[in-house]
Length: 192
Image (cartoon, rainbow, N blue to C red; front, side):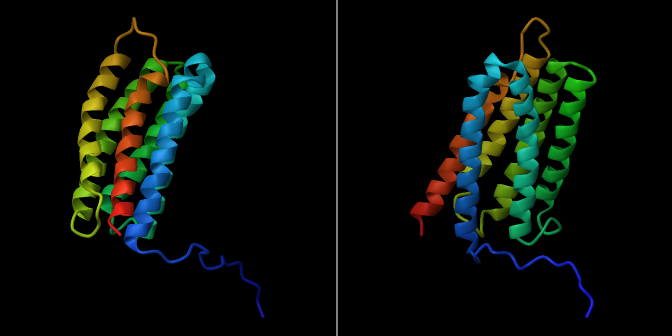
């Protein structure tokens, strides 16, 4: 008998798409709210911590989209999330390069702004695709559209050389994301 390495079956109980999305949106709401709170407090007071937050946000988005896509048929059947995973991973790397090699926080914030716009469009596309199969999608669609507007504001802030920038400049964007994810989770909870 040959020993082979294998992973046990997932221990996560099988869930309906609605119950999965409710947990997923709730988790994303909590993460975004915590991120915003940290950005406005510790991230503002300690720039190194703020930089870590800037790296963590798109990395979290990358992982969250990968897990959600995996739970809903995989990346091939969820092209908007597949692209979001790729874009968020590249943005994470770009932020690391901007702050470590270029020592340019303005560039890092501008990259976050570009990412907010593109990931917002991809979130919008995902919400539209799920519209018929899952409840709670209109907040996701609104959130995606609002991310495009937030992107313009973040980029304008980042391209103002006289402005001191940091994680707090992305905090409001994260707070609105938390709100929309919480509304989606609540809608799924109420419509059992």
